[in-house]
Image (cartoon, rainbow, N blue to C red; front, top):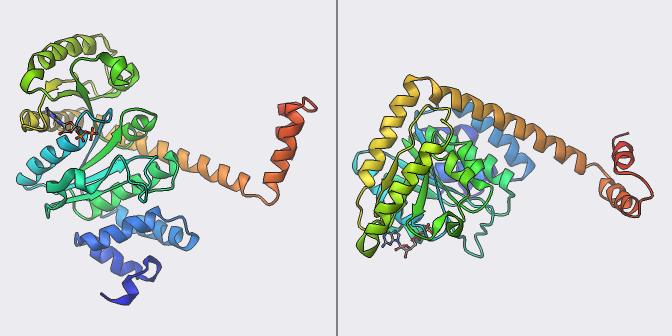
Length: 329
Ligand code: GDP
């Protein structure tokens, strides 16, 4: 390999763009590493890269998948992804996992968990960036989506664990949000909050197989009833409740049929475009806030000024209001 390609900053921007637009995975990987980088020179190049590829945006469908650990997300994505590539689609799988740390081993994005898919030439699997907070992961994932689109991927799957605030973050970057559930155990046991169910465009009960089939069918009816009681969603979409077995590969095609139906429905009624517009505006404001915070906390001596005031306010020598005013004066 050309030695100039070893380090990201040494890649000529135009070479990177050309490779990316040709769908070359090695270039895609490098481009993702670049947008994940926190180095100042990399950031500058990332901004130029994203700017250049924006107009060449390939049309894709972004699907978020969530559910508690063990529900079968990676087994499902493997089966679903293989089905999509057999239909001639190019599939990228990204993960949002703020707890991820490549050296410790991540709960998500572990390539060995999607063994078959990771060997599929039409699939691309990328774990979440390590060492970033949720906001940082979210921002680089949003840019990674754009890079995958420029590289010609048709379906972008974003996987997250359904236990924290990461669902809201994923919901804000996808066109369709799929919630995987298990039969039995109840919502509380599954750690799924009602709010997450209300965010879903599709509720899918996995492991509907073997001894579990009867319970899964019962759960389907229960969830169907629950969904009827939710307020109507902005997409004017009746949330389907389905069954599948990721292991036995049943019900997988029905999921895709529903997604295609949704795609058509939301494009016809304008929600698809409206939602994407809102998402990008929200992202813009999030970035502004992050930049403001950064520039505030990185001011020289700010750490010490804050520490001093922490003491003063905790011993009630000055008020919180006064301490804040002083820091901004
Ligand atoms: P994740 O943590 O949500 O990604 O879950 P995994 O995909 O790693 O699956 C957790 C466990 O459930 C594994 O042992 C899978 O083999 C099993 N599993 C996943 N899907 C199914 C299914 O449809 N039926 C059954 N019986 N087991 C499944």
